[in-house]
Amino acid sequence: MDAELFPRARTEVAPGAVHVPDWLDTGRQRELLEACRAWARPPAGLRTVHTPGGGTMTARQVCLGRHWYPYGYAHTVVDGDGAPVKPFPGWLAELGRRAVADALGTTTVACDMAQPVPYDIALINFYDGDAHMGMHRDSDENSDAPVVSLSLGDTCVFRFGNTETRTKPYTDVELRSGDLFVFGGPSRLAHHGVPRVYAGTGPPELGLTGRLNITLRVSGL
Image (cartoon, rainbow, N blue to C red; front, side, top):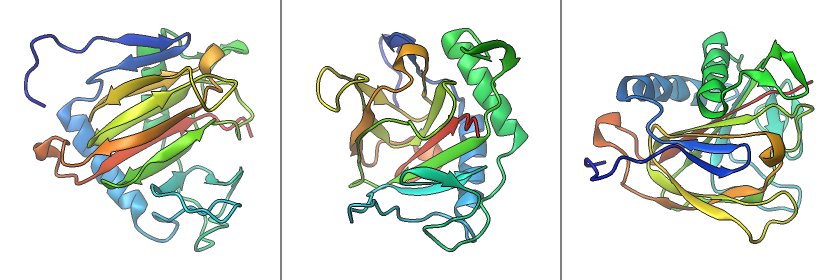
């Protein structure tokens, strides 16, 4: 993006939900992009997700640590090629802990303040210009640790709602390449989604067509 008159500021969108613009510098974004490209290759690579009702998610996905499928976790790609899921690297866990510290001021799980947050799962979604994500909750984990969301590439509208319903009230947040969004505490089970991606808005120096979202979670499993 071109330089702005007023830099974007850290914003608490809801209690426990914080948007930190430009958290990843260009070098770190490139490193994450190269890692995502490696993770997306088969086996256990990028796949199309089919819902139990017969629908198809427009964003494609690859998982690390444990494989997510609607609505549970497995050690193999049970709805794809059946291969063992790729391991979750320690450096990514450390990145998640640092993200929580920077956004929320803590690196601990709310229910056990003496233990560090053991991030062990990543869901990586790839959006092309026509992809979107409906309102949903991240509720398949046995942990109330904050969810960490990192954005690469094209800008999107991130719709952050409430814990009771998929409808209003919600807040639309513009997430750009390098942005961090963390939600935990009273917002941990808030509905959220991506109604729109703005094609062609990613930083040219990144060399990415589309949007990548790296979501880090604690499985509690």
